[in-house]
Amino acid sequence: MNRTEALEIVKKQLTERRYIHTVGVMETAIELAKRFEADEKKAELAAIFHDYAKFRPKEEMKQIIIDQNMNPSLLEYNTELWHAPVGAFLVRNEVGITDKEVLDAIAYHTSGRPGMTLLEKIVYVADYIEPGRRFPGVDEVRELAKIDLNAALIQSLKNTISFLMTKHQAVYPDTMMTYNDLILGGQTHD
Ligand code: DGI
Ligand code: FE
Ligand code: FE
Image (tube, rainbow, N blue to C red; front, side):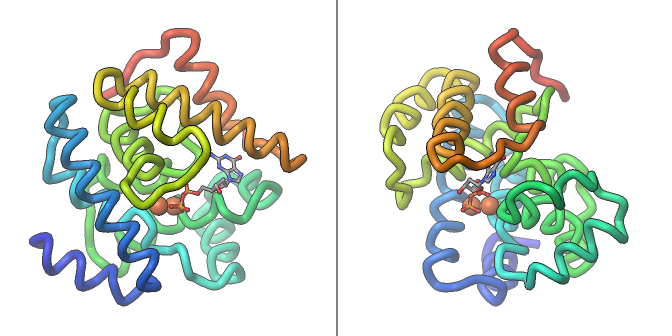
């Protein structure tokens, strides 16, 4: 599947605004893959499909989480977390992508996980810093991403965790564990 075909497929699933975000994530992920020597094609594909399930009805996502035996604690935390693992499942089933590295980069693009692969880190950071993003502190992460991918990832996790805390929201344990893993010098897994 080439880029044009992939973009056509995902466009049908998204709003105009979310599609523009997706193209931004794609371009950023390719740039990061070049810089940090990851597979550019996999980064492109994972980025294109990372938000595939973003607009699925909550009930449908919940059912998939249950039926596919995904981590049941997902259901106790913010529903924003659901589109990532559900997206990986649907991209496999509906689009036919079977590459596990690509599917994992989609599955973990919101929560992160301890021992993230290089590709997972690239999609996570690209999602955070793509040119359309306007979070407080995003420019700092953009600067870090020019030299140190782990530092950029740690800073984006810190920002997200702090943001959730200021809103008095729960933090998904895997997100905290991702942060701890990186702070404690966790290795990048293949
Ligand atoms: O889908 P996007 O908007 O492009 O970005 P995303 O997939 O990173 O979703 C991020 C949203 O999820 C962000 O607004 C924060 C929210 N969220 C809620 N609970 C958690 C969480 N994000 C993380 N990483 N961990 C949480 O526990
Ligand atoms: Fe997302
Ligand atoms: Fe996104």
